[in-house]
Figure 1 (tube, one colour):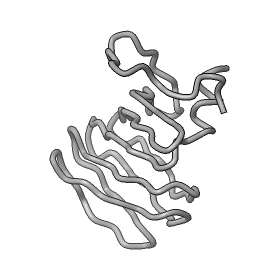
Figure 2 (figure 1 turned 45 degrees about the horizontal axis):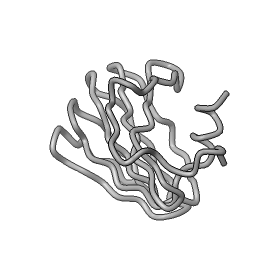
Figure 3 (figure 1 turned 135 degrees about the horizontal axis):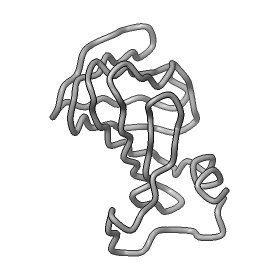
Length: 119
């Protein structure tokens, strides 16, 4: 994990860097402590977070746009104001049907994201 164990108490998004997550997707770690992390993820229309699994519990809020969300083989379209939750090691992915933004919360924090942000 990063040498930094958590964010400051007050975080200004304008002070934080965007990371290229590839293929029309970029993310910004908004805040974190070892047991929780919040990340803003922006998608261009047609870009995707392919189906994957990780050991973290995840809750996601659709801030803007429309997304096709797949969880364990079931797919639904979610729009601004909607949300979804996935448990550890649950197969899930998203596709942006239009430009949009997701707010992801992970428990515990994604150490892989912290390592990538420190490169």
